[in-house]
Image (cartoon, rainbow, N blue to C red):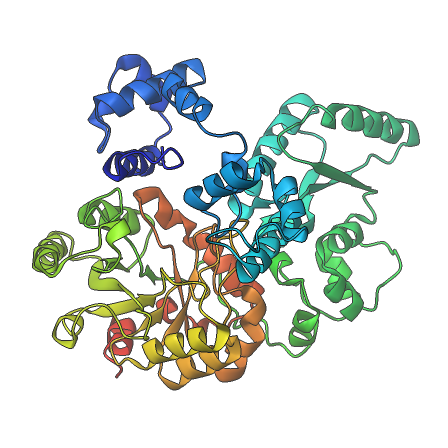
Length: 526
């Protein structure tokens, strides 16, 4: 509908409906019973399209829309920075119908004299094509985990639960994007049984089409060695001295050989973790259960799909001690950002829900757009009313590196900013983050006691965990936030925890590992 240029309100209705149904596992049953309209945001028209899709596997409405689009439009708009209008212009003027044809046209300088493009735009499109090509065949961590679960379930049902198989490789290390699912299988001692099992598994795995799979095999006596070797990245293995194979039935036995404690898989990346393990410095790293509360959560007041109370109840169910509600600010018109008259209504509702659920602390905040000059959305008299402000960039991503850095630094220096949201604006497998002098931003955040967000949404995971050493260098605080737009999104927090652990961040630097009283003091800058 967006590609076709349909009514934006209609498009938004479908987006809200998609968010509304995302956490439900009983959609087919509801479609059969005709009760889809009982869900928030699902009207009669959307229910009909959804019923077709759920029960017939396709939607005539979607098929009609797709058939009406120019050839190649869907492929071209996959490129970061190339919207429907520009893509249509390229199709009409140059007759390009694929990314390959567009790349050729760029290299032949055919866009240089085309209205609305030019040399700079051509260079940007080539950069986007390179980014797109480099990410082909990858999937997000959450998607890879679902594929892995499906593989293991089928394996155990069809090969047998007696065969010991475990995840390994990049997925076990919790990398943001995964190309191949890797598994390690323990083989029986008897050679004939070993050969038969290998053959059976290798033949079976060819039928698994959901994702590329690579299998590793190991004897029982060397299982710990092989699991460590197939899990660790090159830097980790080099730091261990690239050991030749030896008997180690478990990973604990493997690391014992080097006088080391067991090192968690997600940490086995650069080799720095080996030196830290030797020095006893891994113990303070954030625990998997270390987050006590979450900020940066959206509701129906802006572009969320759940009410304040529904978000609070889910946070409470998951064991959090506090939750921050931070809908979009007024400049985010695309996300129905809150006008000043909406704020009083939301504040009143939050206080009412707080009275109803005193066992979980609710903080009232805002995700304030960082404007082009670095100022925050809303006036000072409004900003000071909130318990916290998440300052984020949602527009003008193409600014030059120095100008963008100054924009972000200015926002950090604002006394109302407590969190810097999704710092680079990246969308994994979708668009690169904008150019920033990242170390300068990390240092300034430390100086102003602003927490840089580890945005836990699987499409973002931003700030990149690879900046962990710099965050530790300046003792910069971070906050792991789900950026949840529906109830189910709160559970994404765990992906942010994985990134903090990959970054080897101590619990002391993660502000939302603190108790309610401690976080209240931190928010007040006490």
